[in-house]
Length: 344
Image 1 (cartoon, rainbow, N blue to C red):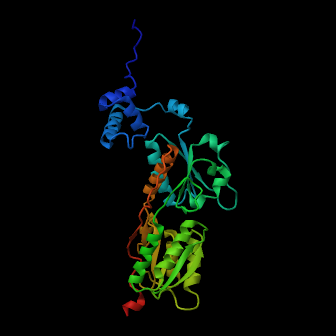
Image 2: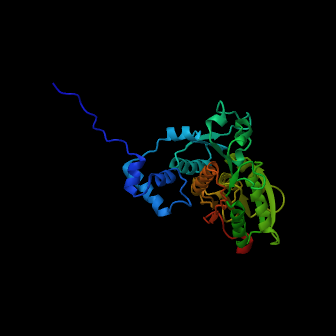
Image 3: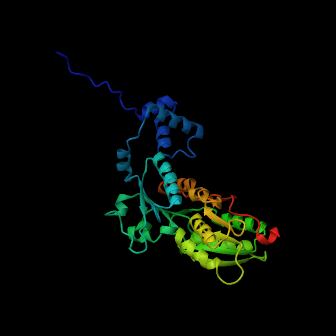
């Protein structure tokens, strides 16, 4: 008769095993894996500890650590909509950094304007360590009482932010690049198709466009549309088909609006870019799906999410980060060309 079988599974590696493999003390392992090593442990040593932990398959006992620290290791990411590709990329970046630090991310898309935002938790304060929120979804913070938790705002006015810190993209420089590109092509009659959203990020785009044309002799008219292709098409048809000289270029606050402009141009019998140049913003997948492909301002959405989550974790650790604005850059494609007047 066979005797009792022994459990031959390998024992779970400990922090002592990681310390031995990396040739450091357990205290150093604790600092590195707790992400508190900056300024206290050399970067090369920290990487050696992380490599040893990966090789051994070491996983810290998060439950015990969270109980000791009184933390849930959970952050809430508040965004306008899950269907927006830009915010999907922001979530990807934020979740990547959160996982690296042993955090989970709860994604909270705000409802449409026909219903009030609801608190998805019995108690957000008890369920969350902190909140990362887009300024476009800031109205939801009151419903979830997110402004009472450690809060980092994305794409928000640093001077009037609700949060302990803000993380921004250089939106103004992106709009400046797009406008100067059109001016260099000879365009002097511009239409700004602005997002009909009361948000700081779109106010910045408007102000940057106005500043870029000042003193150039160019004129800018403004039309507004909701962030849908169909609404943009209707608004663009009305603006391009109205009385007076027709604009030779349209500067759009978003690639979705730019796609609507391209549809409006076709319906009006205009050719992009021969009759009408069009620029977008964000560099979504849509920008290369339309024909001609869209000249647009590329924003590093995943890096934006990464920096936002890293900033929130720094705030939770009692540090005061001062992140610089992430750069935007213009990607020139086929939707822009010299103005009809400059070709004559």
